[in-house]
Image (cartoon, rainbow, N blue to C red; front, side, top):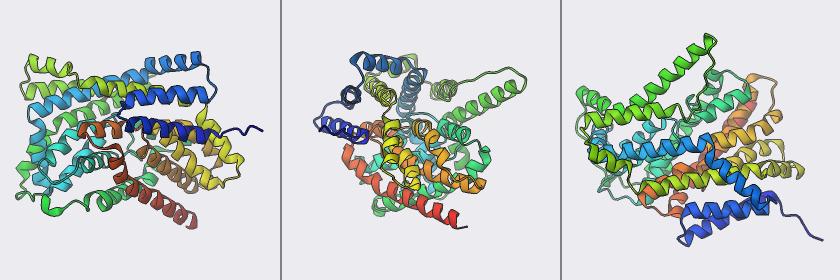
Length: 429
């Protein structure tokens, strides 16, 4: 008798294959493409269907937007680094923070206010400059940049995952934000306890006395970030006003970021007097291509996951094995986040399946289930081997995959444990 292998086991085996190939020094992009092929065939997709799925993923507007966004981030980051703009930002905030460790954590958090896929790549050079000549490993730099870059995405309304969650839950945005905001505090606390505190305090400089002119100079230096936020806000308001007049315009979350990035690039070039030759050199930097190929490979893998119905089959298996409802509500988003590596991925694939399981006797009870589900999905995303921000940060710092991964496991477990405690406290009220 032939026993059918559960889809969950198949997916985990493919992840192990991808990680094993990467340990053999095969590029992660190629590992993901090999994993996509193996998973598609194992899930009984035909070779033609796998090829069609791959091309459809590559030509998807989200993939094209991701490539343009990450390419723009890389160009702006290089221009800011070569013009010493990043040095000025780091120095300015170090004076305000009075501790390099605080500066190294807050700078990625500031970038985290920007809903840009791969945005950790924007803050990585800042973290590198902050911790320059400090006794830190590349894995520690990776953990600091990656963790603190992602403290807002539980509730910050500019993120597509949050927007989709609010739409699927059919609740008011402010209600969702109110319930989810405490998870940012939990995430910050976990990062401080497990990532920042182990760093040797003696290795970090204490900054000079803080003056208000330093704050003004710092705000001027972070203008490239503020420009991106301002352009996104202006576009959102303009589209909302047009919709009120009956003119229906819809711009994807990814595409709405590009105008801000373009404006930011112009600002950086103007303020730092970037020459055309330096701009051309940044645009055609050969180090950009491997990261863009990695993005394409991630999106192909995600497409195969969706087209093979892996997430749906895993959900059905969990229910068939009579696993408790609360555990299903935790595990489905976690597995979806772990598999897709992006917030909108776990929200889009798991929330439509688990929302009917929520207790909706009161709005508070309903949202307590939503908070539990989103928190577990988010930690699944943070622990995902295909999370774009983790991969590009690791590659930027030339850090070990497993060494970096180990540093984020404990804070992730703390966040999930806190989410469970807060859920049961809310149920007891």
